[in-house]
Image 1 (cartoon, rainbow, N blue to C red):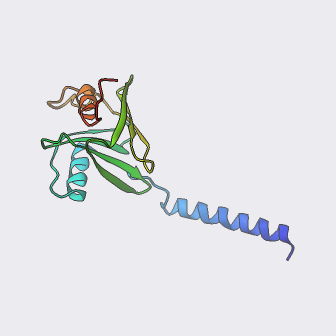
Image 2: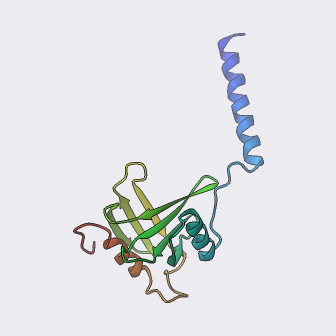
Image 3: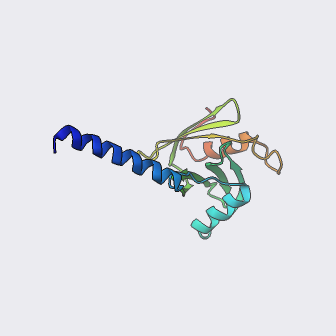
Length: 151
């Protein structure tokens, strides 16, 4: 069989496979329904951690959590495909944080495998709870940056 025919058949087969996988639901991205689901997921994945506050991103694919404890740790949940990645963020793991308009925090990490996260909150965090809003999350992150000041 000539090479161009083999290439055309391979391209068609790959395209058909991609469409079938999409129709079967294998391309769905995981989403968090609410703060309670974020708390439960984080505490299940990180035994011993207790979440004090949780805030979801506008698209439900990211959550930022304030953890109970004297070390001022934060938690991060990020959707990757149909699964969630959970991380405990401690001192020295965050390089920079910028507060942007529209209830947004841009976080830069000291980790080349996950260099940055942009969290655009659904509404000001804490609007329905006891937290004082996005500034609370911003200040909590600042505490984790060695030698940092409000940026």
